[in-house]
Length: 253
Image (cartoon, rainbow, N blue to C red; front, side):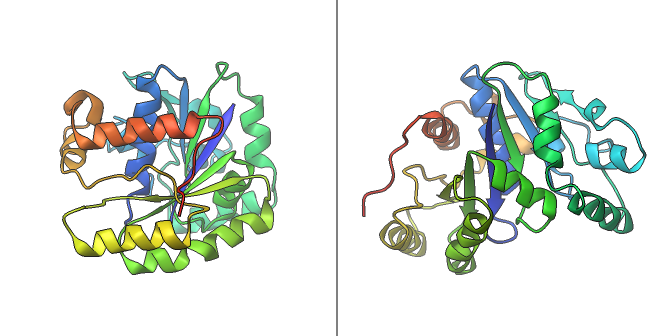
């Protein structure tokens, strides 16, 4: 089992879209995938085809004293995914307290699952703001920190990296630039700064801005079936390949 956590360095940088399309890309490469939503926004399920009115999820089941594993779904692309579930703010506080008392819950429970050999687990870690999201990041083989071309993301890059390394020295930490538009000077400048000052984190893949992603989500599909020759499809396939390379190359400053 390989584990990948995707976290955002600011709100709205596209973490859930990255998790969903990366999962589709891995499935397109015939790799078994389990996607797990660790955010109370509970938005990943919609990206993976579950009806938006569905409220079921692992967190809501735990709070009801039910078996959380029964919240596992599989979509037509053969991606297994586990929604967070719809809960109230008060319930979210109770759930977070419950998790904080069980620091090894996620690792123990995932190891108990009978997953196919070679499964990649992809976590939607939101902004790394809860104990469960931190558990996932610290036990993951790789953490992808998603940033866009806004300066707030760039400023937090080292802060978040240091937070992860404080709890786990073995996890490989990467920086991924999302929604890049090469026609915009600001975007080119941010990419240059990222590669010059954070060469130890920056990966070679850049996710370009592509309206096809919004259209795919609106149609409740993935970019590979809706626009297989699009820039976004090429980007996410490249990302999936990069992440599964045993020794992926870094940017050389």
